[in-house]
Amino acid sequence: MTCRIGELRNKEVVNMKDGGRLGFVSDVELDTAAASLTAVVVYGRLRLLGLFGRDPDFVIPWCDIELIGDDTVLVNWQPPEPPRQSGVLTRLWEKLGL
Image 1 (cartoon, rainbow, N blue to C red):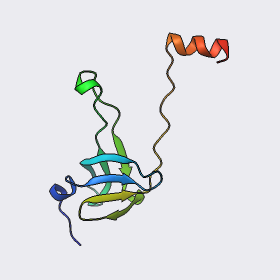
Image 2: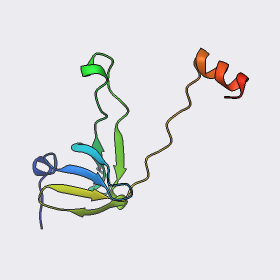
Image 3: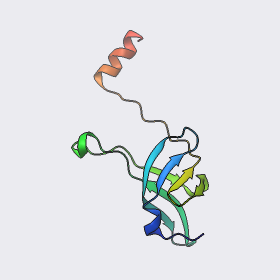
Image 4: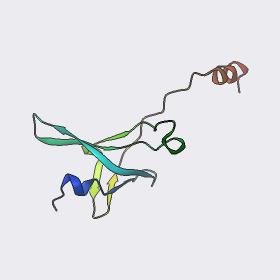
């Protein structure tokens, strides 16, 4: 099966580990030296209708892609841990031991 990048952008990405929908393929990463596709990028979700920006993008390495179907891309991907918040309330909760 052959697939163009334009067709790849219309496919939804589903994580096989938890069954979660990550979004649609938004971009790809290419290695120009090796002439190969290295990763697909799914843009992060919008925060409050886009007024507060968006969540970080998901960059899924090519080796984690299991299957590219007609409508979906199945991936076996473990998302990275989100960074810890270091706000005032977080520090207060940590000091209180809650």
